[in-house]
Image (tube, rainbow, N blue to C red):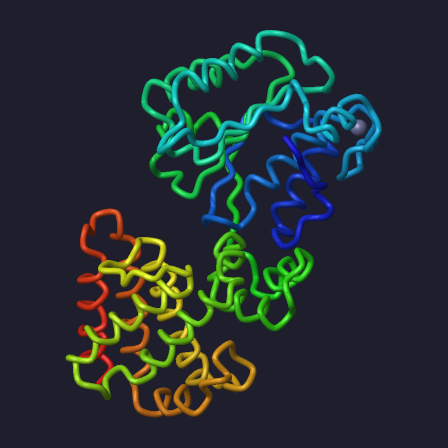
Length: 347
Ligand SMILES: [Zn+2]
């Protein structure tokens, strides 16, 4: 496991305050549930928390580990025997992964002050794996900490949830996302555009820091701003153009026949982002300060001609399709149907 320090984490002030107080009190719990949107850094915070709790040298009011005790050194070498992160193996977390992690907890910590098991995407725990975990959560060995991380807490067994202290995370503010991308080496203009389109997710923002993907988002924005004015029949040819753009963004020569799910998510996010900008203009925001300032004339025109309630409904339709993606085998058809529906709605 590698980790950053709690004090270096951007955003999540409230959550970090709560954790800081828990650390200072010395009465941290043995099981936490970090819940909140995908890609906002929940696992990063979980790693930073257990790195701090495993440290021998930090003072009680220090948010960060000391950096030189034997626990910190092991972490520095990415070889900490007491801190284990379980990630999905394929589509789920398997019973063997949970068993192996729990086995280790029977013994005293080797180098750290505590032992910890972090479970990412805890909602993918198979039933038998969840039951094995539950037994240990009911009677945790001493000096043990579990952190379950999930974007879908409702999927977890109620018996597991009730044994964890829950900490809710929210989307990362746009400005924090942009700064994180710049810190990670992105050029500022690209970072700002990607952050604006990423709906609060760092994972999505990183994904968008790519000229090809941003070109796709721009293409969607241009089309979206004409919704309600063009004939419904333009949705299909536009989608073919979009498929070609996706193919060229990933350097493929062959024409794609269907939208990959992750491509549809990008297109839906881009669509939502531009409709949101139009709504913001209707709420009095200066169009030049919004992510779609380069489409200022078209954004203003749509703000003048479309009812805000219809825009809000349009954003909801995009969200609904995104929520149903797993159930939708034909992504291209679903996308075209959405564009046609929006065309009628925003007339
Ligand atoms: Zn230390």
